[in-house]
Length: 323
Ligand SMILES: [Zn+2]
Image (cartoon, rainbow, N blue to C red; front, side, top):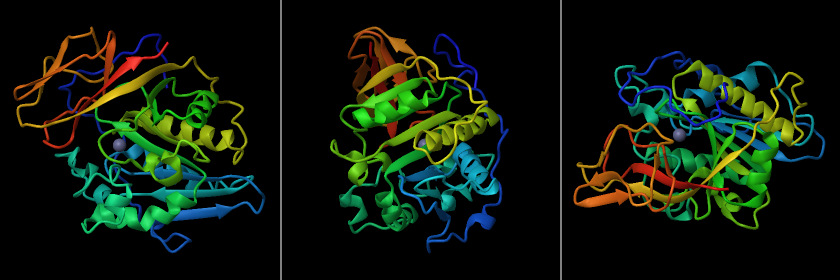
């Protein structure tokens, strides 16, 4: 990963994606060892935390798959505590089509918005809800959770986590990536896995964090995913620290102010955006039918602008830099 002193996007919003990493056959990983497909658990036999490394919450975010397969292929075993490795939405992953590379994010529901009792115990059904119900005890059993994601645009990697001291302490100690998006009020558009159960409680016992590793299909993103996963495990004592690991970098933190959900097919940004663009207070960022989305603060920084307009999905995240 290359660090730069300023946050910049490296590709225009309209660029066609490069496919440096493509899906691989995950059937060798299907048979887990706790009775749930694509879930593998290793006990050290020594006291210590239970850490869950979760990949493919979104089916086209391949970096997590590379990191999870790396742990399994290299035979990583925890020095203390328990290590669980899961591939979450393999059903969506298996539908990947290079002609429509963003469609395999999910089949029906966003697997990262359904982790509330309302959805998990509710009457609806879909491949994602079935999988979330299957994975629920896996998530609940973990003390610490790293949920590995990537972004549609080629932007710098960043953490995303609820604004609890235990999360920021872990992210700062792990040291990379440098950018943190902290969520004082949660995500605001559903319940992600990092807000499920004890992970979403202010008095909760462990860290629950997303790492956004870069663009979905780039090798650099897979490299970041492996590096952050190994750092996360080392931080909690499950692995030795890599002697060759690069040193931590100064953190740059942003606070999520608002998650804008797309209301109409007319949702448009005022200019092409990839993420990390900065807007002055009151400046127009996007329009959505008759609605105007304006910067609610000075130096309003946007993250994860939608590539395409899909009503009901997130349009953009509005944040402010923290001193
Ligand atoms: Zn994702």
